[in-house]
Image 1 (cartoon, rainbow, N blue to C red):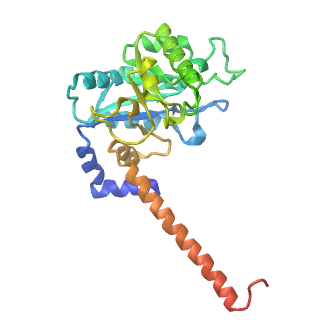
Image 2 (cartoon, rainbow, N blue to C red):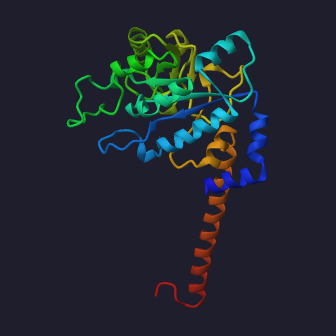
Length: 296
């Protein structure tokens, strides 16, 4: 039903108007797995977070026609200098460091489109991990593969912590360890490091932004939907998560930051239908009681 609302918004011109309304904002897209086919993969296909390579290619083609793809570093630099960015600016991010990013990296290199990869530094693929053994991190990038991506100069690497543990509820010492060790490892391993954190599982409630800043991070990214302005709190940057089921209308709706509206409409529709179902059930019970059939 979410997709049908996206289609309706497209037909009515709501999506186009919303895109124009947010043209001065920066939209950050959040990807995870790409074209996962390995049965032993731990990529989050069950959560519908794996996008087919075909859909990804179509989405990138659309972005090139209508938007300006910039790096996260460009956004941070512009923010620090209070400098305007091109209208319809978009940042590409990929969480978890899944190895299937290698299937789309050549496309991004060919088109010179920057992207930021958020790596879990204690969950990197071992250099000797073969496809037969499929250890738990076999579907992640290795440091050698990250180094090869780093050489292209258009890919940045940020932290998704050491272990992908939700930061909420951690002690200050545990939080500091997750943050500092991850950023230190990234700085030691790659050249194009961006001092950015992607909150594991998107959980950030109650996490001290002062501690994040003290650990060396210039920003932190949530999975809360919405656009970003230069004045947006850098430790609560919003992202639009792209899902495998997204068709073109839904993808464009996410770009236009209509997701909260779509979810609200779906929630109201489901509540209405559930209410109708409850009423129908109660009516059936009342009819049975009136006919003297209750308990028969």
